[in-house]
Amino acid sequence: MENFFPIGLAFSSGALIVLLKIIAIDIILSGDNAVVIAMATRNLPKEQQNKAIFWGTGGAVILRIIFAIIIVQLLKIPYVEIVGGLLLLWIAFKVLIGGEEDVHVKSQSGVMKAIGTIILADAIMSLDNVVALAGAANNHIGLIAAGVAISIPVMIFGSKIIVKAMNRFSWIAYIGSGILAWTAGEMLMKDEKLLQLLNISHGPITYIISALITIFILAAGYTVNRIIDAKREMQHQHVH
Image (cartoon, rainbow, N blue to C red; front, top):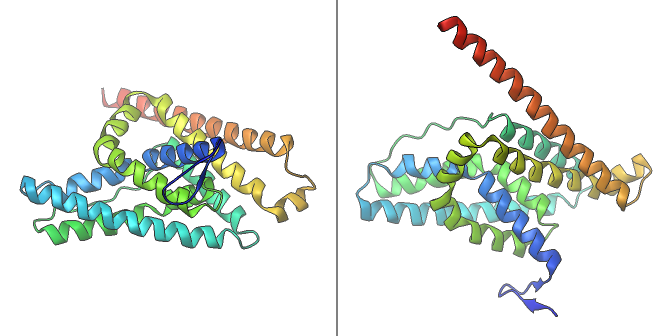
């Protein structure tokens, strides 16, 4: 039995899984965005702070959905899904080794300046987010809109908690990276030209390849993290 989303999308278990995947990706990749919101609004009075967060996040969401619509259209072009998949694999790896770019945001004194800062920073930082959303959504723009809208309150109120949890429990980052790597594998395996080149068809083999890609990214991230930890340990010992 099927119900319907208000946005006119047939609701099924498949759509629910895609929607949950979009929400998970949005939360995982929105940690830095929450920090930007906090930094841009921290010098504003409480009432203005709430207004800046509301309008700034609203503008950022609209931009994010527009970006996603453009990328969904681009993904219909041959080989673009390969590029998107490879880019998403790099994002999955980067998230795992904590290589997210530092975005320095000055605290803004005016509401309009703070709103502008939030929207601009979100647009720059969300390109990786949007590629991931477009890949997970299987060309369903409605699902992207629903997923982003649902995850916004979580992004505003919960992302700082998630960032703290990721720093404290490293395995949470591996779950997030795994979701992104699996989505990247699915994107790669959706490209018909690549399937023809590899002489394979959709089925168990494509899932096995996606799983192997995911395992490779997680293993590579784990190895790099171990090397980084070892270097830090050596530096710490030299200091003492």
